[in-house]
Structures are given as structure tokens and as C-alpha cells.
Length: 195
Image 1 (cartoon, one colour):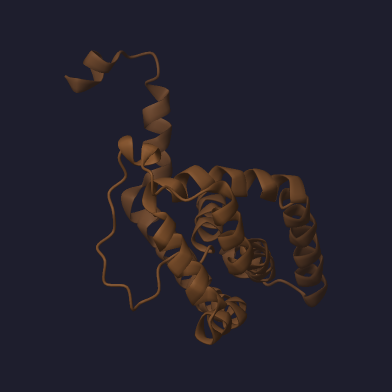
Image 2 (image 1 turned 135 degrees about the horizontal axis):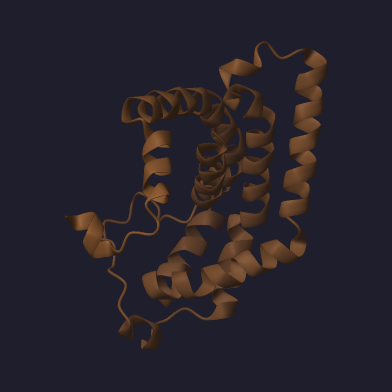
């Protein structure tokens, strides 16, 4: 089933951004509110762009995309049988081409532009200053330097586990047939299905 693979890819991209506060911060996470965008302590676009530069978000995303591409073979259905070295290389090249076309500079610019209002809702100016200070510190730089390797090692272990788990749960739930049933009853109104 291709949907879990695509969903996993999207989740991996979303989680590849190291945007958490350092562990030393004991503040409880803030709940987003409609008013929070109007606060006087809302970080500026320029301040957030600096944070994104310090976080090397584009590099981090590229690393995750590359790792997923190299590990796609582990996510192939068992029905495809053993994959030869030539097929493995061709698949890796195909995935690298796909992700290269997806992750264009224009797309990444749009992605970062979409992140700005989200960060503005969740972080204050002082939060962003603290994050910048942390990621510019020696341990913050080490975290960023080691993160691609940590991500690759984690994904190498996680992808096969995730694929096995998804296949098991999809089979247990009879997921595909249940989805077909849902869409087979498209003509029914919401009140008909509640009966």
C-alpha cells in the first residue's frame, strides 16, 4: 500500500526540523491562540529567518530526504521479492531524482514562509533569541552537526519497524476493505449512515 509510505515521508519531513527548545528550558509549551499573533513579543520574520538559518533547516530536510531515498527498499512490499544490487541502485537513483524535484529552492522557500506564522504563534522574541543562542553555542552546533547522522541511523532502524507495524495493523483492521466500504457508500447521506 503506497499511502502509508507517502504519509511516512510527509511525517519524516515534518519531524526533521530541530525546532524544540533546549532541554534546559523548563517552560511548559504554550497553547496557540488567535490573540498570540498580535502580541508585542511576537518574533519578527527576520528573527525567525535567522533561526531557520542557524538551524540549517534546508540541510536537515535534505538529509532526511536522502536517508528516506536510500531506505525505500526496506519499505517495498514483500510481494516484490528480493531486490538485486542493480535494482537497489536504480531505485535509489529514482528516489533521489524524485526528492530532488520535490525539494527545489522555491519549494523550500515556500515551506519556510509557511513556518513563520506557526513559530510566531508558539514562540516569543525571547524564546527565539534563546534558541538562536543555544544553536550557536558549541553544544547546539554539535547537535546540528550530528543530527543528520543520528537521523540516518534512527531511520535505518525505524523504517523497517514502521513498515512491519503498518502492514500488521492494516491487515488486522482489514483497513483496505474498510476504506473501500466507506467509499462504496458515498451516495448515502450522513443521517443514513448513523442508523
